[in-house]
Image (cartoon, rainbow, N blue to C red; front, side, top):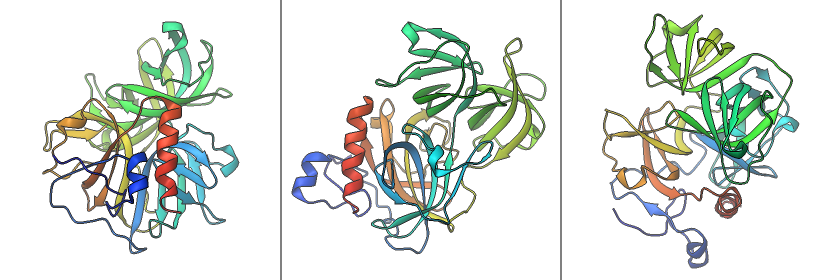
Amino acid sequence: MTTKPVTRRAMIVGASACLLLPRTSFGQNIEAPVEGGIGGTGIVGVLTEFGSLIVSGNYVQTDKTTLFTDGFGAIREADLRLGNSLTVEAQGGPDHLVARRVHVTHPLVGRVEQLTQGGRLLRVNGVDVVLARGVPSVRAGAFVKVSGLWRGQSVVGSAVEIVKPTQHLVSGDVSRASGFNVMQVGGAKVRGAGIGSLQPGGFATAVGQYDPLTGILNVTKVTSGRFIGAAVPLVHLSVEGYLEPTRAAPGYRIAGLGHSFQRNLKLDAYKDKRMLFNGGYTGKFAARSAVILPERKASRARLLGAMSREDR
């Protein structure tokens, strides 16, 4: 695999940007992502700046037609918080992306059952949440909305917001679990309404009530899929996340994404890193560039902010 500076989309940068943005390019012969407004761009990552939105190194504008939602329904743009894990469906060229839908994709919503390691390790809905460096902790017993990225069966938390108690929620990859009529979404076991329709390897959001005695979320509502086609059919993805092993080629997927990589990619070098992948999408993710991201919150925000300024 070759290491060289590349831009996020066209894989060409000026000399000054190279110093700020060292990037690793895939060596495979993959078609370049679409540069105009022909198709939509799906963005998955953590909100690092406002004005408009900076998500996974993308500068995304919003307008009066942008739809804002979370797992419980419609929200306002003013409800967004730095550190929120977002799913954005945008339209336009790389220098003029406009969000048609901004969805706050909380991996977990529930009560903090346990707090250990000096408040850096939380347990919510039976799932471990490891707070990233620089993310404030909360008290045990608080009802919270957790933002962050799945890493295996746990979440690397980018923000934890205390809210009034409501229904519990989990969103992430679907897999099979032991037990009658039980599936797994992310690291949480779920059962109940609609679970039988879920497909392993896909993405789902399950809402209901978590039972700490059984360790199972009893579901009252479940939805499948991360993107709903709010812009136009997606032709490009920009995804922040961690790799996890899978039996299917190329041997890895991005935890919590719900979409598979193109089979011919070589990903071993990135298996233990926080990553940003960009590339075309044709039903599978043909990632064309990879950026290793810092784990420290402030360092990552600076890097992603610098990347977004390339497009302005």
